[in-house]
Image (tube, rainbow, N blue to C red):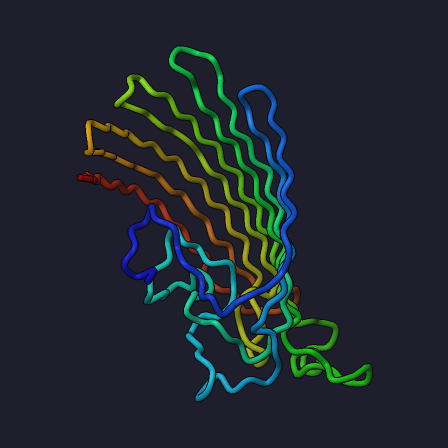
Length: 257
């Protein structure tokens, strides 16, 4: 479960989820590999008027792109959807994911490896769907001219450099830039919805030393994040903006026999 993983480990999503299709193209140029990937997803959990109080599992935070770098299970400051929150009361969601990636090997010294990666996610949830052309959702009926649709545009750029000083000792360094633009991200039909803009920058580095069946790794990262929250035009309410500056590291020793 995600509450037992460390900050540098991958997170897990529920298997109650999605279906779709992926197109993957790869091109090898000399010692280098380049790839382009596109995925379309629709969701098995789409539905209307679900009983999330007594039948379907629901948690406090059900919306927004989850920040796995800074998420905790109290989620006091709304760092995105709780991955345990599988169902929503109203959902009509589709996602488009595009990834460009390369693995470039430069003949410098013992060989420099460069891995650039760019990811774009277009996430749309129409939420409460009108029953017909003459019907409107509750939010649209009580907020003329507005919609309750969630629209997320997520941009992530990352690059990693690695160099093996010896057969046993390798050094890595890299950076990642995130820009998330989320309309109607969090809120409710009664109170209205917040628009969120997230700017996050991360620097990271790692040392790896392997000897026989033992591997020592030391990883350190620095994260700077700004979360700008606002309501729509004409709404006097304003959520506080949030700012994070985090420095953290982890040392591990793995032994196999």
